[in-house]
Structures are given as C-alpha cells and as structure tokens.
Length: 105
Length: 140
Image (cartoon, rainbow over all chains, first blue to last red; front, side, top):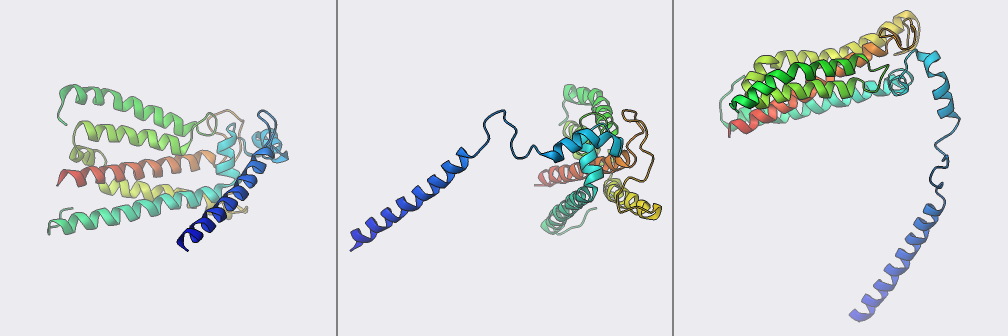
C-alpha cells in the first residue's frame, strides 16, 4: 500500500516536472539572440535618446528620467529611505535605553 | 582605534573623498553619478573618520541633531520644489525653471536642486545608521 502511494507520487512529480521543463525551454527558445534588439528596445528608447536634451536641458539621460519624467517616483523612494531609518532608530534606541536601565542622550 | 598611522592617513584622505562626493552630486545632470552615489561617497568619508578615531569623535563632527535636521531637510527641499512648481502654474514636480544650455553646471531647471536634496538625505541616512550600530557594539 505504502509502495503504491510512493510510486504514484513519484510518477506525478515526474509529470509535473516535465511540464515545467517544457514551459521553460519554450520560453528560452523565444528569447532574442545575442546582439539582436529585443522587445525592450522600442520607440520609447528612441524618443528618450533623441529628445531628452531639448525636453529637460540635462545631458545625463538617467538623471533626466528619474528626476524629471518620473520625479514623483523618486519622491516615493526618498520616503522609503526616511521610513527605514526611522524604524531602525526606533528599535536601536529602545534597546539601548532599556538594556541598562539608565538614559543617556 | 587609536593607531597613529591609520589616524594620520584618515585625516589626510577625508577631505579628498568629500570633495569627490560633492563633485559627483553637483555634476549629477551632466556626467554619470547623481544624488544616491554622491551621498554614499560623502557618507563613506564620515564612516572612515569614525572607524579611525572613535564613535564619539564622529558624533562630535556630525551631531545627532544635525543629522536629523539634514535628513528632514532633504525631503523638505524635494516637496518644496514640487509645491513651488504648483505655485508657478504647472503640475507637481514639473520643470518650471529655465532649462539653460545643456552641458553647463546651471542647467536642467529643477534637476540639480533635487539631486542635492537626495544627496543630503542619503548621506545623513547612512551616517546615522552606521554610527548607531557602532555605538551599539561599544557598550556590550
């Protein structure tokens, strides 16, 4: 009985793994070959490379993207930094003042 | 701590590290770099000083209150620039200043201001975190 359960489980596992392998190999076969422009190289890339200087006046395309086209996103990132340091200081300072039973500033 | 050679070399090399970090921050819209990288470089100079001398000397150079205010100032500059854009009649965080000629130091409108704000914020964050962790290890 136990042998039957084990054999059924192994057959089932093999079938599932073969399905996953077929999916993954088909995904790899669909990838663009090395050096070919992939789907990420579209008209947006062309637009940014051609019009960044006239749109924003900055030579660095990365800075123009994160601080002009998507400045609101960067504000959220700075807020993440702020929240992180606030949480860490909360934990550390509570531990320091509670550990020795005396407060020092 | 307390090694003469280490302390002398740290004392000599800290200003150059800070100057390089400020260059990275101020030229963030022209050459590779920007607020995150420059802030990390400036913070590394403070960390080197604290490692060579002591955490208490590091706290004397950059007191807790100053670090706290710098941290808040970075975020405040960001939001104030956006609100000034609203007052000038464009959307939040849209470029409302003069774009200038591409390649010069004062160009790109609000991008240099936001870069400086991010540099302040990242620098104070890393320095505060590192000093507190060092201090934690000292008292045990």
